[in-house]
Amino acid sequence: MTYSNRYAHVAWALLVIFGGLSAADVSGDQQTPAGTGKWPAWIDSDKIRGAFDFIHTDNRDHLATLAANGFNTVLVSCASVDVDKPEAIAQMNKQADWCAELGLHFFPSTRLCGGPLELRHLVPGGRAYVDGTGTTLTKTPCPVDPVFWDTVVTRRGQMVARQSLTHQIDGFLLDPEMYGADASNFPGYCLCTHCFDEFFEHRELNAAIPAAADRAAWLQQQGLQAGFNEWKARRAEALARATEQAIHQINPDLVIGVFMLDGNNWYYNAWARGFGTAGMPALAMSENTYSTGATRYLGWTRERLKQLGAHVVLAPGMWLRQFPVENIAGHLFYMAQESAGYWVFTTLGLWMEPEPVPTNDYSLPPPHSSYLDAFSLAAAELDRQAQEGERFAAKLKLVHIQGAPRESIAAAGLLSPAQVKLRTLNPQGRSRPLPDKPTLYSGSAVCYFPVAAGKEITGILRSRPGGHQENVPVYAVIAPSGTVVAEGVLPLNEPVPLKATAPETGLYKLVLGTQAHFFSASLDMPHAVVAAEAVRVIQQVNRMYFYVPPDVEQFRIEVGTPYVAEQAKLLVWDPGGKEAASAETFELLPAVAELNPTPEQRGKVWSFHMLPTYSANLKWDPQLPPYLAEDPEALLVPIE
Ligand SMILES: [Zn+2]
Image (cartoon, rainbow, N blue to C red; front, side):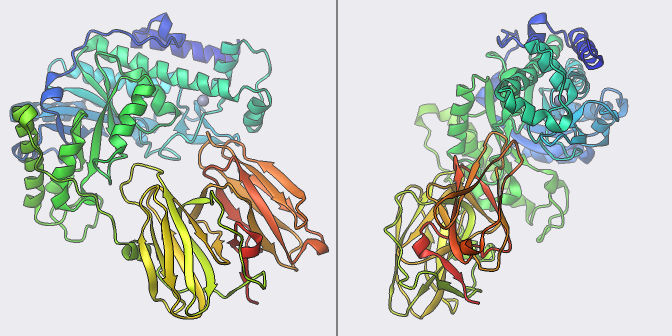
């Protein structure tokens, strides 16, 4: 047994002792234990009407204001609380007692890796995260290190559970956003030595553990990538299950919640399965609803969590400052339907001075009374709904803000005339019929096309759903002088024909932008889309054509994917249609094609394709004109 294997066994033994684990949990058994806890009836009948606040506020009058204005729960961020911080624990208990007096439920939250309080447990040389390049992220714990997890999650949860026996504490929340780490989330599956040791032991592999930089490639060569990832998820689930059991051994009725548990990545999904039981589901304190409120996302997510086999109840959150005050009550009311309730981030702003122009993340514009009225109204409507039952008719309206196209495009800095001079490469200036499935983009895109005065500008713009946002993509066509000749929104899955008469001759600009969702543009005239950082190619069905100027002897095309779970293949063809390069992404490493065109291949049109064409980020060589077309006949090139 290697040193690290021994370490792992000692760690798991500690968990068994301190966490009250059974052997089945350690082996990663996926059975959901029965549990004896009682889900709080008040959450079903009244719903959580939560205020997210901070322990340092430490003000009873502030809590009384919340209690008098529609809130029944406070979620208190206890960033200073740890098992060895008795003063902070006493401060937490004092606030729990105030809440009990005021009729408020109380949920303290602690952090997974919020800062120095947690990082002191990640000792130098300890089990830190190792990424796909073999780099050790020294401020990021290994996500399945049982020792770190036990220290910052289980023992704190047990401490809160113990306090809940003598103080009115309704639940324990984990805030997994790692403000103190290298990044706020785990960038992927950790490849540390300990993870490899545990996996090798699990698979009974006798091979030597590859050097850190070679591990990702080794897993792929051995066909072990999927098995390794699945094993990691089972470990993460077992850790969450160990915590759940350790907490519920002390207080079976304590609710457990995790912020961002609906995040839909490997570890959130594993925790979702591990923290909840059929009788005591875990709360998913959603932040994906922060700026959108009650949307179809809630229904989709409930369904997804069910498919996952997780016992989780959604509790959507609202970032107050993202909503006009008159829309708040409606969103809160609808957020509470078929969920555990709602919570707002953050009522700390009510404790601060009102600020017409905020100077921090929390303050709210005056008057505060309009916010308090909104909270009271949402609560009153929930009360009326509970009383009237079947007879209840909702009064509150759900208003989603869709920015005006011109405002949205102006906000993205794209509402200006074409800044470049382009000409058609093909003297006939024609393009072939529109492709059936044009390339999809996200973010914002700029497309140029030359038109003569009096000619028709025609084409089809499409959008496809790509998220939970209600706001659909917007577009505008800007004439050479800056006049907006067409503008509008792109309803999801409804093609919008573009039809306008050009008022002047010159280079026109079509701009498209979206906060979520995807869009495509097919124009009946030569046009090229700008290859820029801001545009993300979501789905590329057709080859993209580009121009290699006569003086470029060497160039590269780089394609990356934003998620470990998505990989892409890059193919490049020379002007004769012959494959000139092929490269694949690996983990988060991009696919890079290096090309050395012969003199005959320069001053010509090349093409490339990204497969399997999902969510690729293109990095464009600055030596090449940044214009792409789905048809070689349509391509535009700079006028020298
Ligand atoms: Zn690891």
